[in-house]
Each structure stands twice: as structure tokens, then as C-alpha cells.
Length: 59
Image (cartoon, rainbow, N blue to C red; front, side, top):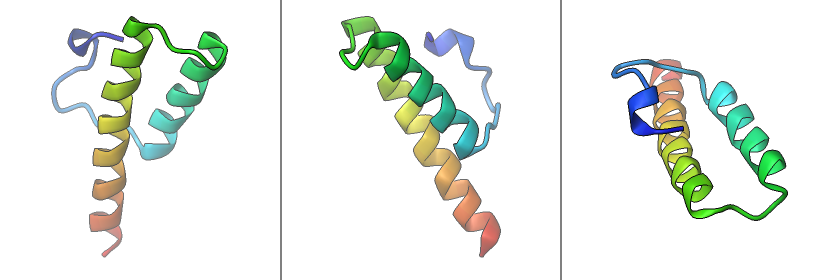
């Protein structure tokens, strides 16, 4: 996934992003290439933002 493929302001749930992270690791067979590592890092940032949003919403 490239940064361009993520629509600005698009909001996915933490569960959706987590599922994509799991799929990435399965596709990679447990070892990430440089490109997959970059994708993983973007997904983790998105996941963290989704978690924060869900916590704030719940409060």
C-alpha cells in the first residue's frame, strides 16, 4: 500500500486495519521486504490513530 492509496480523511476501524496488518504478515510469510515494511509502518500509524479515535469516542 502506498500513501497515495489511502484517501485523505478516510477512517477505518482499528479492527479493519488490524486485519490488513495480519494479511500482510501472512502474505509475507513472517519476513517483510523493504516495501512491505513501509506498508506495515503506515498501517501501524493508521491503526494507532483508529484506536485513539475509538477511545475518545467511547469516553
